[in-house]
Length: 113
Length: 113
Image (tube, rainbow over all chains, first blue to last red; front, side, top):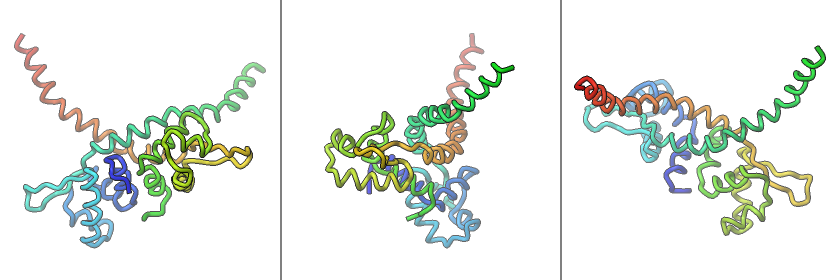
């Protein structure tokens, strides 16, 4: 398994439960208990997923408060965004190309008027 | 390992060699030989990575031409973009918050004038 930061982030995201945990943390900090409840997950399962997310830098856990809330850290996601944005032009382009025959038809329609 | 389409795509992306192969294919179709050359990879290694990328729907291989060119398929990347875009507001927001003290300082400077 690759050990560069971007690969670690992508591996952490490659699990629906971990993505659900991130989505929940996107709404605000939560304890491990609060994270486990809506997904009917056992605490050790949540802890295991949180460890993967923490290793990727996607989640931090406060050591100050006694309830140790988990918090979403968005910084690693900006690297994923950068990777994806490199291809964004490409799919816009292919989409435009798919639209071309339709656009041509519409233009022809107008010239008939 | 998760088997939903988005997780399969993210797992396929979670390897620097596979991302390099995709970047090369982003510039145009290429044969397995052409993909192997710049990365000094052995053909079985490239084939192994291509299989992962094909399973994720990120690469297709033409059966028509004798040289069977590989082609980038961007559709699965739009799902990754959708996932990331959900957090984009969040990092813009945090960035704005980081800028706040600076902005405040600048405003105070102006009020001193």
